[in-house]
Amino acid sequence: GIGLYRSNDEGETWEHMGLDQVGQIGKIVVHPTDPDRLYVAALGNIFGPNAERGVFRSEDGGESWEKVLFKSDTTGAIDMVMHPGNPDILYAAMWRAERKPWTLIDGGLEGGIWQSKDGGDTWEQLGGGLPTGLLGRIGLAISPANPKRIWALIQAAKEEDGGLYRSDDVGKNWKRINGHHKHRQRGWYYSHITADPQDENTIYSSNTGFYRSIDGGKTFEERIRTPHGDNHGVWINPNNPDIMINCNDGGANVSLNGGKSWSTQQNQPPSEFYRISVDKG
Image (cartoon, rainbow, N blue to C red; front, top):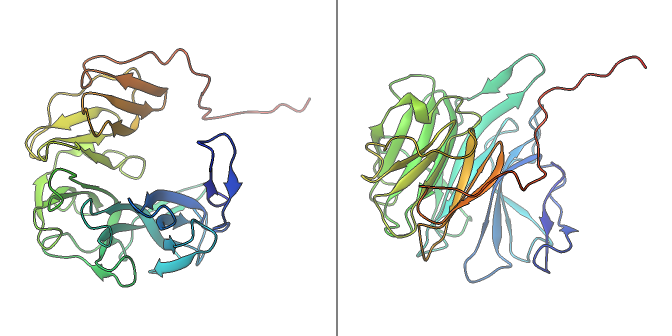
């Protein structure tokens, strides 16, 4: 990563807006009524320590930046959500990750979930039932239908600590409601959850498979089939949740019936290279 880019013409052209050294950016959150106010969850340099990681805030559309949440030069922010009814309330997930040619450092003692109630000026680490100790990647989702309800998909060193947690009181108290490993396999690669915009009991989990829960995350229906595996995210139409766009290692696909069928991926040029070799010629 070499920073953040902004478009003022619906994506036709782009302008570099700083944050050159933040490395991997996990999430961008924009204030719903003030587009000049935005937040960036920066994981940092994936290959080694650096101070440019954590949560950054801009109040002038990205012209300048202020680091508002920082733990250390090895722990950055991987996910962030904003309260739908009060944009001053933010939740950020912190994670230590470092990629080496010979290994992956996944997790640390500084991981967890932080909350701000004043637009990022101050932050407090949440407890109330959340696991402690060695934690890995954390995915966050908040229900637009009931903003008191928040989910956190947590990777933890202890099997009994990892899983899907839910709070029904804006983060004060949490309970582990699902520990199935299918939502946590290769957690450093996935850990994405998405809340339905209209139903507080419906939530989606994106992993090698794509899953939907209609009881608040306690159980998940049989896997929703998508054109390709390795699912990394889903956009759900806020006015019609049956319309959704799923993205995976094969491309993007659209459903108009809640995932029962999908558009083709054979009309897209993107491809993925895992390995390449060069001969001496």
